[in-house]
Length: 268
Image (cartoon, rainbow, N blue to C red; front, side, top):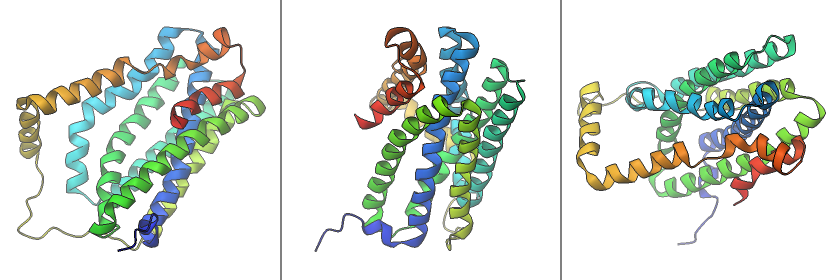
């Protein structure tokens, strides 16, 4: 059988979702660069820059279990639409308060927490939706294409952000990020796929089932150790929030250089 490297793209709903994701993820990576640079300009504090990571991590830890249950209980497409709207509004407010001159570090953290909470519910819904958009034989290809789209957006987004920061400032990046969520919303609205009700033989996920799964993970040394390694690497191994300090004080580059620094991990 001939292998087709882009087999998953022949499915219209998946193609719409992937294209929307490329635009949206690129916008989110642009916002990440803008927030780090913005906080650095406001505070010049390494500690407050590090708090960006905390603001993203806390909603993930607190809501992670609930997000998985929610993705299995409700229409994933509608759940994604709700999360995209929340993230759009958060970025739009961030842009508006920046333009008005009323932005404070605490307001950036609050909006970042709101956006991170929405993203925590968005991710499992997005991952669980993809298998419903392509047949089983094209699922590995769809997942590969999804990862390629993520990495590509993670490279292009920061580089564009660096250029925009230098030319137009942080508010413009926030507004562009808000606009990019429309790409996913348009893809979701135009999809032919609709939620398929579960048959009577399929158990509806409950909190009891989620806690049972958690107990299984805690009782399995191999899975638990792997997850702990990943968790600690994510918490203590990422230096991306310190990039503005390296760009300014170590390398002596401007916003364009900062964008290149944020794009470098995606290239690697």
